[in-house]
Amino acid sequence: MSLVTTISGNKIAFFSTQPYDKAFFNQYNDGFELDFFETQLNSQTVILIENTAVVCVFVNDIVNEAVIKQLAEKGVKIIALRCAGFNNVDLEAAKQYNLKVCRVPAYSPQAVAEHAMAMILTLNRKTHKAYNRVREQNFSLNGLLGFDLFGKTVGIIGTGNIGKAFAKIALGFGCKVLAYDIVTNDEMIKDGVEFVSLETIFKSSNIISLHCPLNAQTKHVVNKDSIASMKDNVMIINTSRGGLIETASVIEGLKEGKIGYLGIDVYEQEEKLFFRDLSADIIQDDAIQRLMSFPNVLVTAHQAFFTNEALTQIALVTFNNIKSLLTENDIENKAALLV
Image 1 (cartoon, helix red, strand yellow):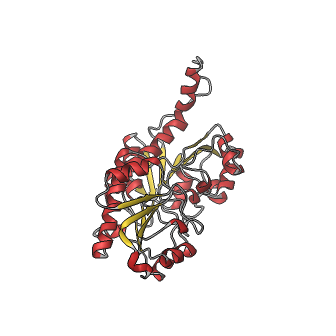
Image 2 (tube, one colour):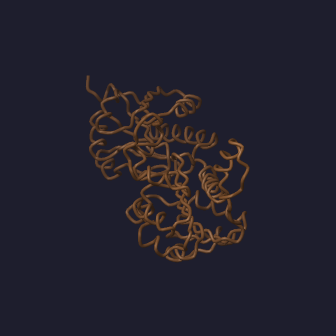
Image 3 (tube, one colour):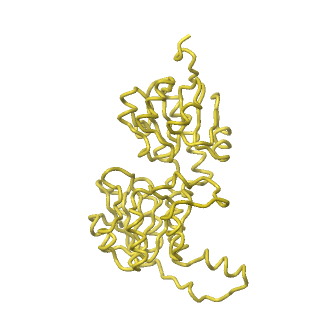
């Protein structure tokens, strides 16, 4: 019997899974056989896949040409991303080996946008430090001075669903909101958002929030030169993709006092760190250790998407994408189908 005839279209192999992934996908499963692997998908772990037509991957799984070739050899037909970003997937290779690739283009834009604002408020009003102080019976306010968000200029890079949701939140705080994207949004303009050049975002913003995908044009959009053009004491927030920020340049900006605040929910080398308990380990990544040593830096571990509503939507949309591709070889929501 050939390999292909033994493949089960009813089986999905999940990689980089956490307990909450299992809980939500099991809760909304309707007829699939689910295999969950905690390990990352890469060229060494492809061997775990047996008799399945579908693999489900996350942001830090490695889905390059070598992995895709192995998937195709194993009879896999669909790569289902349970996230919006797809910079970790070689789409040309998927097309070459005739694999369909789908994603969840919009699960809960509000979840990520609200987390970005939470990071801004935390960095500004230092509530994380106040919490720890009071627990130690230290009721001093020294060192906790913040600023009014009202009237400040917030620059948004990327005005997709998340950037749009974040703009509404910032407008609600009474901020002046500037935005940059390759396409302007008439609805946002009506709400009071001003679309400007990327250079104007850097030069004019008190707070810069990144909400764009990672690609060749946006990689290291925050770098030595762009930081130099920013306002002194600027706040930079990144809840999108770690590669948007050139880490070494940001560290220099923090050391020089040019960057007043940094909030990152993503990190360029996060696949070696995030979604794991490393509390008993010696972390070998000197850059993340240096970042976390600054008192004006807030790091969360890719948490922005992590709400009940978002995880519910991710499970439902992922299952619907897979069902549509298995039965009709197409998806009604064209933004969900990449190849």
